Length: 379
Figure 1: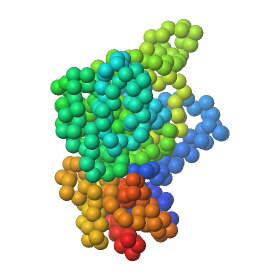
Figure 2: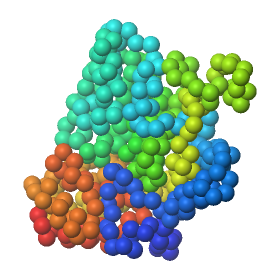
Figure 3: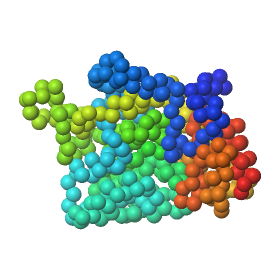
Figure 4: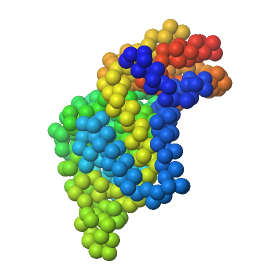
């Protein structure tokens, strides 16, 4: 990316001007000036002008779905809004028909939102199997050897939140297709920082959020599902917005919409969707392939520089297609180091005793160098 374009993007983020080195997007993303402007416009409408701004919400909803569809190479009609990851996974899990003896395979380093909805099935006699990870890595073979004729669903995160390991989604998708297994992927730590083409990936259900790498608001998540899977899901929760001709309110005709919007039961998170729509412009304009390339360059740079100060990144010897923008490193004094970095206005995270560093594509090498030099001072 040319320096002029990068500097223009960096100008969108006020925390940079305030001297904060923010390398913590895997926890939560900062809001750009464009997103703040959209939020201000929304609040202005709701407080001073139209107030009943439902038409604006519908416009932003349509626009945001189209932009997400473009980024994922997916039909906008396959996208639905949900409040958070756990709610979206629960919608899928609770909508399927389960029988005692059915099996689900996940892995042992997933974020709890991708675990508890499945463990909740155990009261129905469903067995939840855990593929075993090894030092932050989950090999697809560990999933494959757990498959039996009773396996009904496999779930994995596109990028693991503690290690930054990017799973071989294509390989696992092919295995699921061979065995007629539903394939679900949590993309919250991957979408917006690495590329995902759903036409090539062969995933039945993805779930993601807007607050991390997409740098929008909390409480606005989305899922994308195939038409085939949609027909297998019993719609447990319905509302006035789930049905065809929803504005014919006294007809009471429970005729569900034929796309993913049937799962949207009523009033949406209008301000969250409006903000998400504004945030997506940055990703459309920059291009997700370019964003991924820059992020992987940052990762390789951090690998080298962390190694030079005597620290060992967790995924140092992995091939690039297994990497993401998350770099995790072992550190003996992690809690103390985080405190020192916070005092120096450098934001990273402590996860499972390791330092997790997560810059984004607009981060620059001066910020990465500042982190490295500060870590060197305190380790």
